[in-house]
Length: 102
Image 1 (cartoon, rainbow, N blue to C red):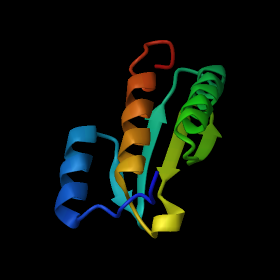
Image 2 (cartoon, one colour; image 1 turned 45 degrees about the vertical axis):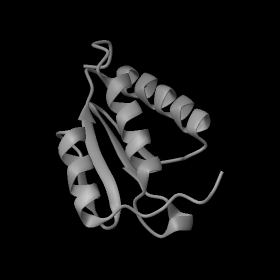
Image 3 (cartoon, rainbow, N blue to C red; image 1 turned 90 degrees about the vertical axis):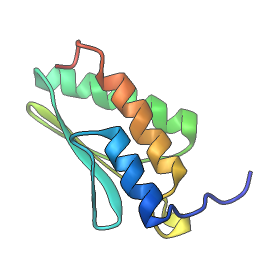
Image 4 (spheres, rainbow, N blue to C red; image 1 turned 90 degrees about the horizontal axis):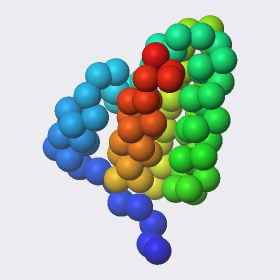
């Protein structure tokens, strides 16, 4: 498998639109903060996010605070945002859609 290619500005804008709130581009990363119903729910969400990272072999920065989980992702070796980042964000959205976290 080759190196992921950087997204064009147009493709990135479309991807963020499709990902929806709370995703945004900040400092060359896709970033979002998701509310959780408790610290334990946030910890479970982090565990699920870690499983996604291992499956995709693409590892975000995850932060845990009471009532919220932060996600920041970029493709370091490509020097910016790629389809791999969008794939991770999409999988995270699908995980979060489970009501057990909210």
